[in-house]
Length: 472
Image (cartoon, rainbow, N blue to C red; front, side, top):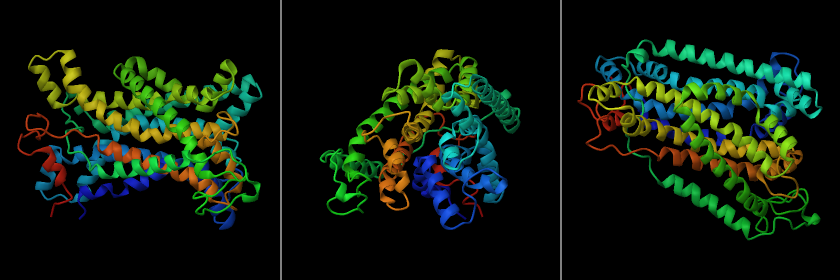
């Protein structure tokens, strides 16, 4: 039987999957699986077979993010009293794992609903790669052509889909949780735990800084047409693009804009998401509405109001980036308020302010902060997607999305031209995942939530020997 401590082995792989742009995954799948291998059709929309490659291109990055969120919740589920009692009675690890998954799913459902709506309306780049007349692409074309009836119909369809998805996820969460949510009988899934090892974030961070540092020492605009699409060498470690420009230089200089902008947007989205998530009655309708509008349409609206420029993608992505964090905050807050220790603290006379500062926020903010870190590469990808569609930075800017867009036509002849910015994005994702794993509070002996409901077993010990995975 496997122990839960070994489950983090797929963290780097999920980081890479979550960091790859959907349009890049779509291009690779269409070229390799669809054209070269001929296993599946790559263009058009004529039947069920044509849905597989687009579904993979959209589902792999989204599934990686949901997997990391589930990974954040599972240790608390395996440390709950019911899991310890089940292990003591000799239940199999598979049975306990299945129930632990059911215990964690309600906290993930709001973000799953957001992914459903976001992928439907925001898959413009993937629809463009596979030549699919999807809802997002149709709405974008209507906006570009100023076809107001089609634009209004597409936007209304997305808003209705958002409402249906949100309602369905709320009903499903209540059904899975049962009366424990109403009776305040849940256990907290976010208990103090030893932080993950700090070596990997330092390693990934040093590698990323080295790439950016070496790139900054080179000229990103120097043209040498005699060196077009050269493979990586000592003179050009990342190779050259179609104009003979050094890709290492362009990746390094593009990091200044891409990473700084993504970090600033993520910080603002985290602050707005937590504040709005604390008032779910106000934020829930806003989350449904904002998530129904793809960033591409927001970028077009910003372009129409303020004109095109480098700030357009930042404003567009920032306008929608807070919604998943607000939904996550509301979901965790709802479950945390139904826990036994909150009920006990209320019984001891604690007021709302004390509960918020000392019980609710310490339990909710760390996982939401880890979620925001996981979405940092996603924010960079959203900026890259807008650049790929021509709504962001313009040539000769070395912005990473523009690099991917410029070099995608040469992906088959010179794959390094696309792999260089994609690899740096994947490295950013690995850094975000490993740093998020280290944002865990150390358990202290005075912490009331270190023990189970019987007050007998520390949570840290329960996580070292998770229920069901060490059972006979």
